[in-house]
Image 1: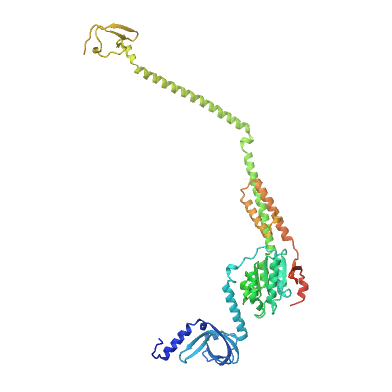
Image 2 (image 1 turned 45 degrees about the vertical axis):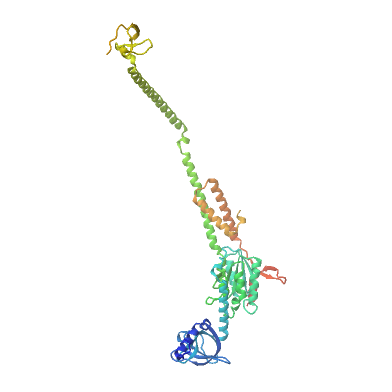
Length: 401
Length: 82
């Protein structure tokens, strides 16, 4: 676009807009300065100039944002304004289009807080995966808080009422003022070294300034790095501190923290009593079942009237003996029949049986049966077998067939 | 047996003992053993819960960074105010 040829004003302006829009720094920038030339037409948009000793910056805050202003803007006021820089084409002016504005002191605190939050968040200090569950039955609860004031009293009272067995270790520290961050860190550190199951760190509510220690980087890191689960109890339900984000559990108030950390023993007693009752009932039922089973077994006739059982057996043996005899007889009878039949068959197959009917068998002197007249010579002797006895015969003549 | 357990473990154990016994497929010896253990656990847990003791201690570090605890008198402190 930027060749040798002249560009139109619109083209240059459009180019500038593109350049500004492409710069991420200018798209989300915080600017500190003094308000001047404040104008607020009936449209509701606010126009003013931010200036310092050397420079001035035109600013616009549209109705959507200006309607949410929490404090009145006025000429001469030091503010921190956040928004994006763009060119207003018609006037050829670059301007800050404001989305948020704070009075300078508070505004900067907020910005520092935001920056720290973003940084620690990137480090993963607030990650959900880091959160540890609270122990169900802590024996020792550590309190890192001020030893005076309502918060510590409330926490101790509540914990002792709910769970008189719990040992409470108070690790005192200042919770506001310049020394607070260091003292809070030291208090948590002492508790970790002494050995407790869970730590509550906090204070009763307070203004943003009073809660500052709980937004201190060292405190946040100590809470995140503590060896045992930490409950934050910075009594401030609406806003939250970075300690709240780093803690394993955030309680809305110190009292709520005390209730979260220890179980209510009277409730547990009810559970325990129930278990005791169930144990007794289960045992009773168990014994009753065994007793019933025993009764059932004892009622079997074999135990109550053994003679009858033997009688029954005797009868069984008797019957079995009879059955055995019958079976044996039947077996023998069948064998005998089979034998007779076979003997008959054998008889009918006996070749000598025909002799009984008058036939005779003729053999030569070598014992061979003669079946043809041609197989013997005249004058030869033959033996003739009859039904009873044998004849020695002489062949006189042959008649061949 | 119960003495070596913490309260929480003792409660868990009791719960499982009761469930085992309730399932009812135990031999008499096993059932009696379960029951005996259960009764012991009930007594142990009860004793733990009954042991009411005001135990609030204050934990401080000395010059040499060694730790020491002493009894914390809540009432005397509360008078002091913030």
